[in-house]
Length: 263
Image (cartoon, rainbow, N blue to C red; front, side, top):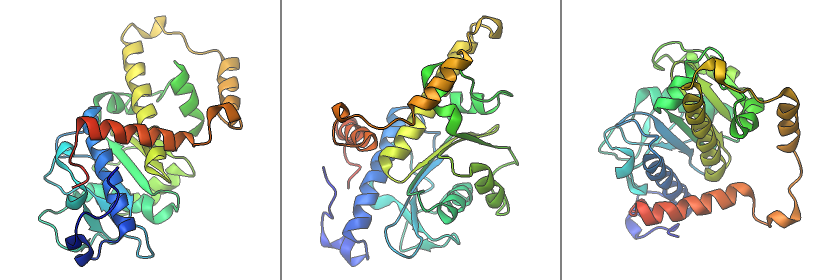
């Protein structure tokens, strides 16, 4: 797996080995999101905190599609929206507003993904939100937050309300807008957005048969899932964390199906 600098030109630009690894992971996250169909042409965004004390984060250059993004093309910005270093592109300002809010408020927000997938937008606009229709949704609902729609995310004062609504959760539905997940690692953020997107897809398909024919999971089962997701990991499940296993598998998929992200 390519996680080191490929030549001295990156060192000359002040990019450390630690930052390069984050860049490779973030570029892979973009490629994977395109493979799963979560991208929205030039729009939506994934970000990652740059290691170090400066509170910088990396985000996509506005003008490249997700399947074009590589480690070297990511744009570094500070929490005030200033681009750090040279780039041929700017950034999506709404992306800056959303991601700077969370990076500035949450120490555990090392990676943040926000999408406008058709199913995610559909469920975000559903009055009841994510429904307890399946096992995946049941695991998400206890830790899912919501943020009401205020218009295009261009107003800096929305950041305070977004962060307040997020609270200590790591998955969110932005009402009438889309999905969001964050994590302390790329695997945690990827796992969060994967399960949220899949739960939204399942809900849209389920409701297509008619609301009166839909089976809501029994309350006792809902409570049992809440208990089960907080259980201790068992020795038979192996030494590696779930999120590490997820990300290793995801990187292998990116290398097979969308090579070049580490350039």
